[in-house]
Image 1 (cartoon, helix red, strand yellow):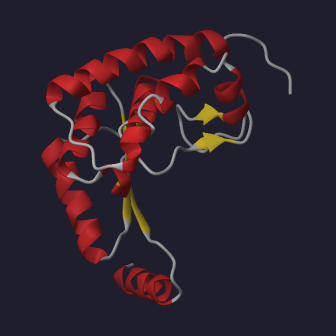
Image 2 (cartoon, rainbow, N blue to C red):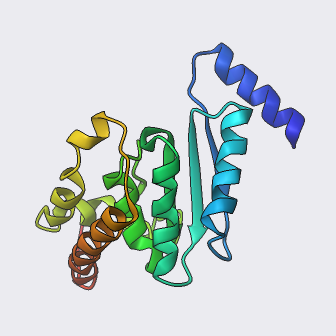
Length: 174
């Protein structure tokens, strides 16, 4: 409810905490304009970082989320799609400058559909990490991404996702 939310934001501000406000859509990925409105509203409420997690019904939903990084400072946004079809957007969000990357501590502890497992993520011959670390220097600066650049980045990440998919099909023991 709004009063509780306002109180928590006030409490966080008074104790020096950073505020992450999140929006989850478990059915679909709304238009980029609708998602931008949601993010703007969260920033007006006092968010330092806005997290937007939608459900990818098709590959193009990943591009919708990528476009948000054209409108907001990447270090203030975490935008990705849930589900198998949205896995690439999880990698893309980090490579475009998102301040956090969500992973499960191990298989079976995922909190969202399509979430990577830390162990598998870092042991897949480091190909996945190399792909997202390729833009580590860019995270230090504000990134402006054109549609063409976003599509090019998505193509590279799709290639990386094939490595992830291949790795996830192997039996891994902890």
